[in-house]
Length: 86
Image (cartoon, rainbow, N blue to C red; front, side, top):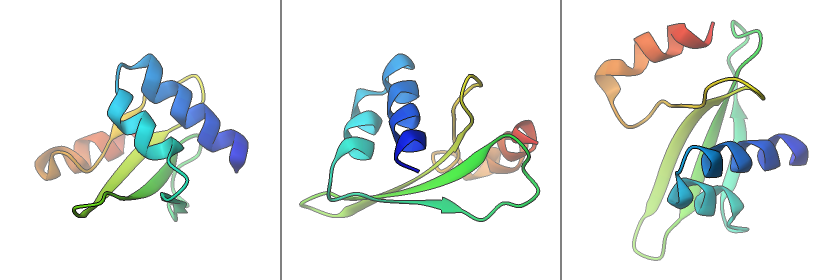
C-alpha cells in the first residue's frame, strides 16, 4: 500500500493540490482503503489528517494514470463522481 499512497501523493501534486498532498504525506495521517468492491480500477482512500485545531477527513477516488476525484468536498456531486469511477 505504500506505493499506492506515494502515487496518490504524486497525483495530488500534479493536480496542484499541495495542501492535500501535504496531508497525505504527513506521518500523523491515517490512510485506509475504503471498501468499494464494485470498483474495478479505482480505490477510494480515506485520509484522516490530524490538524492541530481539528481533524480533517478526505475521501479520494484514485487509480494510477486516471483522473483523481475528491469525493468529500461536494456531497451533492458525490454520486455522479462515484459513478465516474466505475
